[in-house]
Image 1 (cartoon, rainbow, N blue to C red):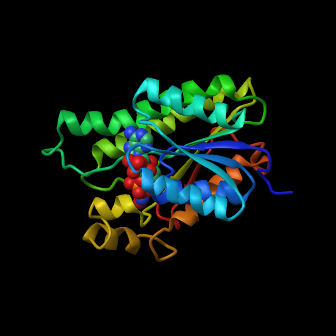
Image 2: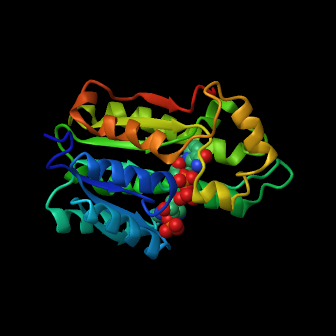
Length: 248
Ligand SMILES: NC(=O)c1ccc[n+]([C@@H]2O[C@H](COP(=O)([O-])OP(=O)(O)OC[C@H]3O[C@@H](n4cnc5c(N)ncnc54)[C@H](OP(=O)(O)O)[C@@H]3O)[C@@H](O)[C@H]2O)c1
C-alpha cells in the first residue's frame, strides 16, 4: 500500500517550483492533493493535470494565504472536496533581496505577510480538521544559518517560521498533530529564476559552498516532505530537517 493512501493533503503554493514537486510527490505516494495557488492558475491546473493523468486525485484552489478569509476558504474547499484533512504543507513563500540600506516597509510587510502570517492563518484554519496522525510541514530555508548577505528580512521570516513551528509542535502534540520543518538550500525554481538568483554570482557562491556540489532540484525537497507526511515519521515532531546538499 502506498504510504499516503487515503490521506488528504493541502500544499500551499503548489503551482510552481518546490510546491509543485511536493504536490506531485504526495500524490505519487497515494494522497489526494489540493494544489493551492495565488495568481498562477494555469500552472496549478498543469500540476493537477500531471497528477490526474498519472492516476492520482488533485484539485487546484486559489487563495492568498496572507488573507485570513482566503486561508479559511482554502481549507474549507479542501474539506468540502475530499471530506477530511490529514496533511498541510505550508510551502507558499516570497523572497526578494535587499541590503540594509534598501529595506523598505513594503519589502518587510510583503515577506512577513506571506512567509509568516500566511503560515499562521492556514494552520489556524486547518487545525480544527486535523487529528491523530496529522502532519504539518513548514518550508523554511537554510538561509537561517547560511546567512546570505542582503537577505536580512527573508532570513528573518524563516527564523520566525522555525520558532513558530517549534511552539506549534509542542502546542499541538496533545492532539497528536506533528509539526516539522524542511529547510532547503538553494533550489532552481521559477522563483529563483525570477529573483535573478539562477545564473548569478550568488548561485555560483552557494553551489561552491555546497558539499554535494550542485544546485538543489525541487524533487530533492519533495521526497523529504513526503517522508514527514507519512507514518514512517510518526515519532518526529519539532524537527528542522536541512535539505541542502550539506551547505549549512
Ligand atoms: N528556491 C529556493 O532556493 C528556496 C530555498 C529555500 C527555501 N525556499 C522556500 O521554498 C518555498 C517555495 O519556493 P520556490 O522557489 O519553489 O518558489 P516559487 O517558484 O516562487 O513559487 C512560489 C509559490 O508560492 C505561491 N505564493 C506566493 N505568494 C502566495 C500567497 N500570498 N498565497 C498563496 N500562495 C502564494 C506562488 O503562487 P502563484 O505563482 O500562484 O502566485 C507559487 O506557487 C518558499 O517558501 C521559499 O521561501 C526556496
